[in-house]
Length: 315
Image 1: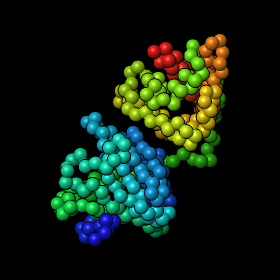
Image 2: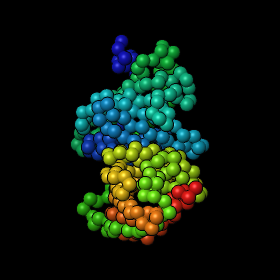
Image 3: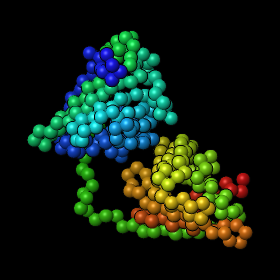
Image 4: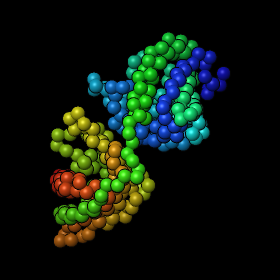
C-alpha cells in the first residue's frame, strides 16, 4: 500500500445543504468563509492563513472556551473546481509542523480526505471520506474506534455550516459603504532610518504597532518584502484583534505602503512617508479607504499608535 492510499476502514460522512454547489465550494475555499464555521461548535478561529492551490495549505488556530488553543493544517493535493478536493488533515503547532493530537498520541498524524460535491435541483450533497496514511496498525485501530465520535463532531460542525449558508448574505447590489482618507503627521527625534525600520522589525513592532496596554500580544509575523505579508494579533479581554496586510512599496527610508484589513472588513491602504526635518524625522501617514463612520475612531487609533512608536524609539 502506498503512502497516499487510504486504509480499508475509512471515515465517511454525507450531508445535503439547501445551497448551490458554488456556495458550498466557496465556504470551503475562501479563508473568511471557512473561518466562520470550521472546527468545534464552541471554538473560534483566530489565526488563519489559506493558500488554496495544489501544494498549498490552510493553517489555523482554534481558541476553545477552556482557553486551550489547538492548531491544525490542511495540505492540498488535488483540486478540481467546483467538484472535489483531496487534502491531508493534521494537527500542527504554531509554525505549521505536524504534531500529535492533543487528545491521544495514538491518533494518526495524517488523514487523507476526499471531499466531493454534487448538486441536484439547487441542493448540494457533500461527501467527505477520510482515512489514515503512513500510520501504524495501532494508530489505524485507534482511528477505527473513534469514527462514531468523529461523525458526531463533523455533524455538529456541518450544522454550523448549514446555518452559515442559510444566513442572509450582503446584497452585492446594495449601496457600498462611503469611504474617506485620513492623513496625519508626527515629528520624531530619531532618524528616518530608525523610524522606518521600526515598522518592519517584528520584535519592535510588537511593542507598539496595534499594541494596547490592556492587551496581550499573541502573534507578530512580518515578511518585509514587496508582496510579503504581516499578521499582528492581540488578545484584548475576551476579544481577538487581528490585523493583516501585504506590503506594496518598501523604499527605505522614505516610503512604505501596505494593504491593511481584518476579519469582516475589506482591505484599505496605508502609506507612510518620511522626511528628514529639524535633526529628526517627520512622518506623514495616509490611510485610504476608511469607512466614513469609523473615520474619527481610526484617526484616534493611529494617533495612539504613533505615540506608542515615539515612546518605543526613545527606549
